[in-house]
Length: 92
Image 1 (cartoon, rainbow, N blue to C red):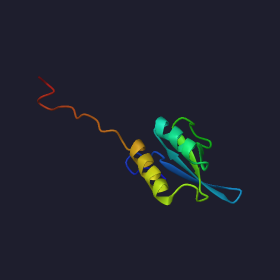
Image 2: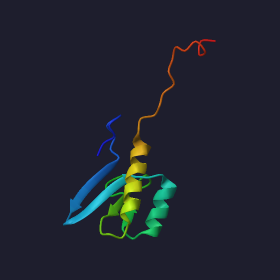
Image 3: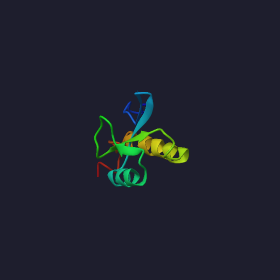
């Protein structure tokens, strides 16, 4: 799944050996806490291990938390707002 603003991936769904996996981007500190809290959360499979987690969709992680992780991932990859140039205040 890609962010509509910049086309960056914020979630990947993988089926491997009849098991469903979800890769989501995380803040590094949160990523570590989630990995310690749930056996079904592991470092990102085929992704940057510092910034991505893989959730093994086996029911260990509550659905509401999975939804929050997807929303957080979406917000992490959203386009950055740039300062607009040409304002009168900028020219002073």
